[in-house]
Image 1: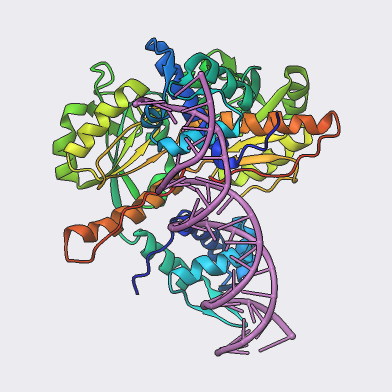
Image 2 (image 1 turned 60 degrees about the vertical axis):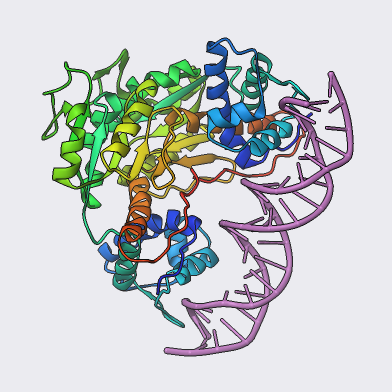
Length: 224
Length: 224
DNA sequence: CAATGTGAAGACCTTCACAGCC
DNA sequence: GGCTGTGAAGGTCTTCACATTG
């Protein structure tokens, strides 16, 4: 019952989940791999492989039961429980994240907003008040924070990560444009806005040739 | 001279570039694949493979010339020219992106901020004034916009993408939590903040077992 | 007969290991 | 001696194609 779900599949499950929730909202009770593939932007073979990896319950000739599949994916992703997260860095990005509705909608509660800058401590963002980073260990303990989000400038990122790890956080999402190292038992993911643009720049430049001479260009877009 | 750089390599080049710029700032003239690997958080074999893919100039026994390598990577990524980008959606995220300094630092100029909401049109964000989305085609033409950034709510994303494509934009970065389809000759990349958290949730849940019974857990983190 | 589930094949990516060069 | 560049091996992921099943 506990297959090791491949990483690539894990990273697509949230996509399927979103598509399925949409379908459920439209009153669909059942969905084929073809339809789900279209809604999620992948191939139907991939949908079937992915879903079979979590021991799924499809019906040949019919498809998948939307409600059941939502439950399966939620449970696999660990979304049947609610998670408390914490955001370090109350700059532009930290504030935008703090106000972003999509987190709460998906079961992620923002437990605290932290910064080292005394001028930011006490600031209200949405219905949260920024606190000093020194309060981190206490908050992690009292609020049961599972995930830390780093939205600080690059120079502060490693220090903040170290503090998070020291306070017992084992999952980190890093938005700072900097390399951060953590112990093996801590999971870290990285989102770098400027890097995404630079990758687009490559393809834009490459494809610009397409409009000029005869150098043929094959398609590709790069994974997420 | 025009090797087809693998997608996986392209998505790491910005990482190397950032590390190299740091090293240059610290006065390093030369760097080995080991050092660069450490700075970028990958293995040295990967650094060498990646760099050799762009026909690189390393010196056996010495390493790579930092300044030269910066030039090579910039040129490969198309960063020797400056790009104009445009942000659609002046909500939390759109404003945060508009104020983010990292874009300008890396040669991406924000040419315009657009929204359909008349109450947002005219708003100043940083030193830009939000304009109505209807102005998109004119702006793309007059400002030579190459990249469109979608920071709208999910429901608006497809419409905005269609308008961007119609206006001649061929590269799109989509932050809206929605599937967006574009013609084959348009490159689209997607960044979904909530999805990243959901992926972390999976690993957090899986590793929580590690603290309880005896089920051994192997490490993995999933790519970016 | 429509649609799943899955072995097998193929593409892509990473790691290994070492020859080659400075 | 130190470090690059790369062929070969090893993984992982995706696609194909079809047997299987409600």
